[in-house]
Length: 231
Ligand code: DC
Image 1 (cartoon, rainbow, N blue to C red):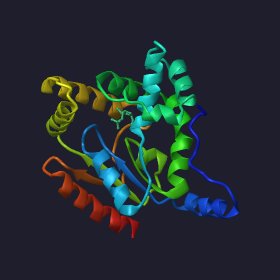
Image 2: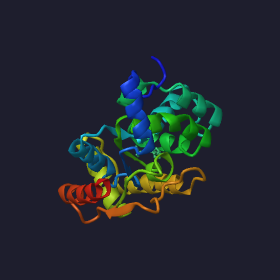
Image 3: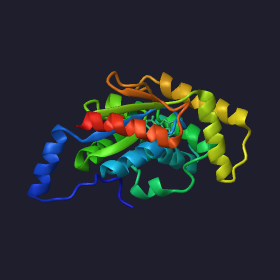
Image 4: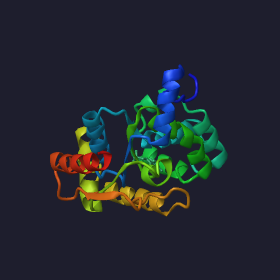
């Protein structure tokens, strides 16, 4: 497989369209901690707006998985950067990118500036090419600081742990709720404390707390906010 390529076509018209997108990308940034509901919201917003959707967490998960497969340590910068530079589109469709081991490996490689740098241009090209709804931790702060619409989706740690626990149960994975919450808190702490591109709301992001909201209510709130920002 070839390394990750930007979703770009060719031709003069396409070039001009890309140049204008480059100046003002129609990007909706959806950042926030684990299990806050940002993936569900971002996917629905993308469908509503007719924009491509990118789950940027998958990139870090795939890098972590490659390092684990090779018997390496996800905190080893040489191994992790090599894995990031060798990433292919096929890596993102693997079925073993979720679960406690993949979660922590993703969070570990994500602390490394060299890994983040290796993934930066690809994410920017993705968003600039056709516009996009992108979910992650640093979309509004680092990847697209000029995105016209930014959401920071959050919820209480207890609510997020209950949701993650229920998601796992629905997939037939039986876990102790307390363990799920402890792992989630550890990962959030690592994601928020790292020096490079830490998880935090952009100054111009709208914070959406979904603790008390169902999926439909959260989506309607997000839709109104994003429509107002996109004009
Ligand atoms: O969104 P997720 O839970 O699938 O992300 C997995 C890990 O990847 C997360 O713990 C931190 C990292 N990540 C990141 O640092 N920046 C992003 N834009 C997306 C994810």
